[in-house]
Each structure stands twice: as C-alpha cells, then as structure tokens.
Amino acid sequence: MADSVTKSPSLWASLQVDQNDIPWLNGHYTYASDNNRASLQQMTTHYSQRLVVKKFEFNIPVDAVILGVVVEIERCGLSGTHTKESEVYLTKDGESPVGTNKAQTDVEWPTEGDEIASYGSSTDLWGTNWTPEEINSEQFGVILRMGQDSRPLVDHIQVTVYYTTWEPSENQPLNLTAQVVAV
Ligand SMILES: [Ca+2]
Image 1 (tube, rainbow, N blue to C red):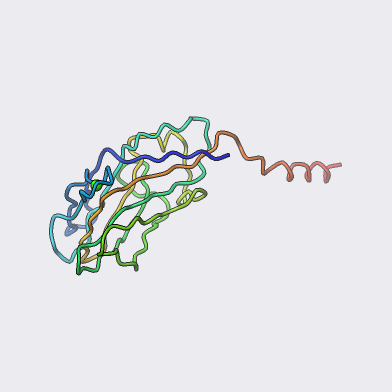
Image 2: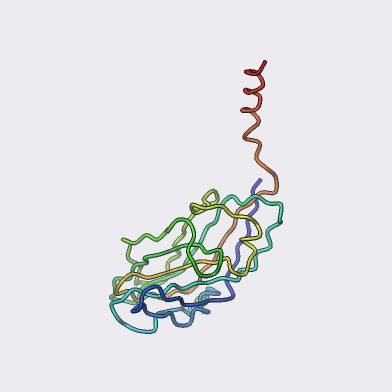
C-alpha cells in the first residue's frame, strides 16, 4: 500500500530568468491557506521571476520508493486581468527546474476567488526520478513562473508525496517466464 504525506513550504526565493522579469512579493504568504497572498512587485507586461518555495521538511523513510508527487496551488488572478502561469516545475537544488513543466499555459487563472489547481498524481514522477533524500532535502521545492501581463495572487502551495516502503513485485512473472524458457 502507498503512503502519502502532505506538507507546506517554509522558505522562499524569487529568482530572475530574464533581465526584465518581475520579482515576487511576500512569497511567505504561500506557506498557509489564510487569504494572505503572494503577488508581483510591479504591474508590467513582462514575465515574472521564478517563485521558488522549499524547505517542506518531509521525512520520508530512506528505504522508501517514491511513487508520485502532487502539487496544489491555491490561487486567483487580480480582477479584470488575464493571468496565466508559464512554469510549474519541481526543483531538487532549490534553484533549477527538473523534469516536466506542468504549467497549463493557456488556462487563465480565475478572478472570482481562489481555486486550487492540482498538478501531477499519485503515480506521476514529473519526468524524473526521486530518492527519499532528495524529497527530504531543504532544497526540494516548487517553481512557479507567470506569463506576460499576469497579476497573480497565490494563497497557498502544498506538496503531497506518495511512496511505498516495499518493492512492487512486477518482475516476478517475467522471471518465471524466463525460467520456463531456460528449461
Ligand atoms: Ca496564504
């Protein structure tokens, strides 16, 4: 059976990708669902910097097998705006994206109150592989970057990690077949 743990971040950073990227403001407001929301520092037409939230303080057993990761972002766009994400990544080193960009870049964020967007699944490793040590690291985190002309308001970001502490025995039938062939 798979186990799962859900955690919120406790550290954030705003990292520049291109020169004109807009920095994030109040990234620590993403730590809890309390209607205090992270936003961008300026109203311009540029992309945002990368919001990195990390230090989730997972404590996955070191002999576990990671099965999937789900990121949930409770967010909305400022009323009257066309707010879209451009990047939703995981990071292993607290700075650089790894694996698959899960952003739904053509979907406008709702402007009539918060909605929770979910990325990944209990069996989705985001196009890379994970050790318990990598998940437990303070540098494991989520990257969120906004598209042009966006006015994001991010209330909460949380991560659920699915894992099992025993190896699935999917290889057994193959081994049996191999033995029959060998005989
Ligand atoms: Ca909040």
